[in-house]
Length: 438
Image (cartoon, rainbow, N blue to C red; front, side, top):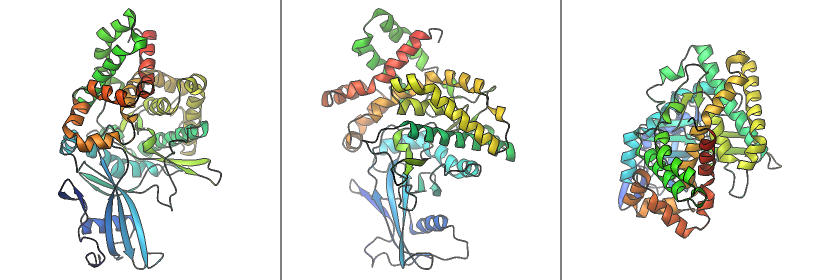
């Protein structure tokens, strides 16, 4: 039961968040009880007493895709607490509540339908076939909201890398091992329980990003062309001709690279492994020992290459890829084979030749994703939140119509911005010059 002590303890009886003069109720008292019961894994006959609960606005930058973030803190009293009062801290992801334009777009594109399916129907089944914790557990899901375990809570001990902590070979190989666990686990679920993830969840595992129906992607493609056309290194007739005549049609025909294969083995893909979606756990010497992922808005069912390359392009430099790309691919394949053996699956479920062919095919969409997202993830700290709050209509215009002015404004305030965002476009153009048949 829920103790009716909210007013006396200084909290409202209903959790609410005040923004722009309005009150948006995110979670009711009854929903908080569901969260607590699921988190504590209580049986129906077991009771729990909640003395208070509150939401705190999260501090994460809102970049690229939809979502607003909160911390839910629930005070629990009774026999299920180590002490008289125990605090349960959860991570809450909601459709945007302070920005009507973003909320409408989020609902129109069904962002949460995909993610709710991943957290509630897919990942719990894949987790059964993994030996490491794969994801943040979901305690409650609603069509517009998710309540997840807080990976940064003391008893779990995960955290993001700090801005001054670079990715090392150990971090990268640890995450590639994590991907191998995820991919092998999805194969095991299918093989051992007669499931076809692609067919069973076809209505949720749709392509959300690299499609012409997505204004955000088309706007990003136009922004990519704007940056490339005006880049000082690309002022040659050959490159300008490529940008003018061939680049946009190519960008509008990239969805085919994301679809399930009819020849290669498909697996469940996370496909959004930028640094804010990866949490690491460390030992006493501050060496990473495990990792965990969040955010499944871009998840798909397809061969594994795009998952691998999205991570490696995001967390390595060109020089590191030149010297270590094959090492990382070999490590992933070795870990995948080890999981297949441990799960009594045929090791030729995905052969090395098949993996390499898939990775070769995935290079183009991986570069395109990086070229479009890097200008957003490299915005000056706090700017996205500021523009979201103060210039809602203009920011929506930047995201879904035209980004020329967006780039000009940031370059004016940050002289280093161009150098931070152009490397994936440089690699994309170089790749297209070498692969003219595309």
